[in-house]
Image 1 (spheres, rainbow, N blue to C red):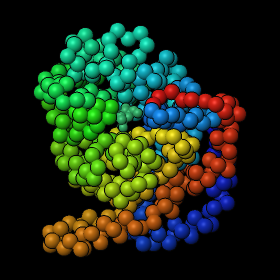
Image 2: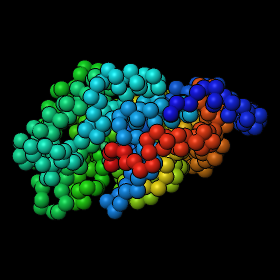
Image 3: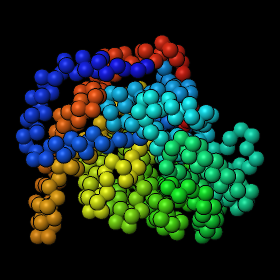
Image 4: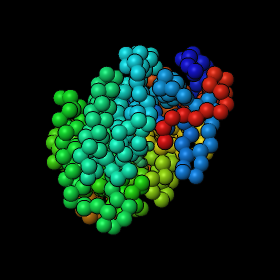
Length: 424
Ligand code: PSV
Ligand code: MN
Ligand code: MN
């Protein structure tokens, strides 16, 4: 389903007067609103190919209607999101869940929707049909060199797929670890993993990066070989300047100070970027901003401050992706909500008065420092985001437009009512 620009303009027209009032009100209070609008327009958040269908848990999966059953349909869905919000201009593929058989055709299709290819993701956490060796006891860490070689070869193959599409990074998330004390020699497992990663690193094209994603637990419940940012940092710093640590918001133990982690990784030039989601307990993969929007804002505040200090481009110098998928919502509506939540956190972070905050910190004025942050956080920036969207040809109200245009109904007409997308 493709939405015409004119259709969106007509829908926008109905809300324009209201929007203008709200935007003018907030714009008057912000000195650099033009600058903020430009930054919001440039900011793009990749959609993972596995988030376009209803996710599930090991207890069940409840398929929705009109889910994409091929990579082509997934691209079409991201195109639909992007036409509505103008902020979902990239797709991230997981191999082998989504193998681009004909890379040129896939690239051409994505270009039609104005989409780029974000990082490609390898998968050595599941056994695939016909695979010679099992990943039951790990992949890059495995005691058997045959298993390690197989996992290394897979990662190199994923790089090749990415190259054909124009991706510039490989994300490696390993489920490697152990479920019981004594199962694994931590140091040996680390060394074997490092050696394996070094082989993969050698195969990286000159202008590529490798992202090492960490996760505190699951599927291994006693130890994870890349379990936290310390371990990820060790790997990325030992690998070299093309290696970075990737932060998935759901991959920390409860109450971890993620904003501090982000700040220090950035200080060391080792922050790859993000997998955005939200959680109450662990890797819940809930809609971004649905549980802890203040934490998300604080993370963005560190990102903006850290990137500005280094003269980095907010839009292009780190990798931004949503990594969420669950049981009960329409996945496309959920992704529209997640994208909006990210834009809200980013816009609020852009409002922080950095100079006054620094002054308050120098004077140990704790109350003032907190007030500065909270006043940015409590500002309703939604009209600014809507304005940025409208300026770039999107919908003033993406979610409402999705419903008014009966987008899901249209997808069901073409794809059927009982569909199950590939991926987790
Ligand atoms: C693991 O929990 C993870 O966050 C990694 O990024 C995987 O690639 C993705 O989820 C798979 O759903
Ligand atoms: Mn992730
Ligand atoms: Mn995860």
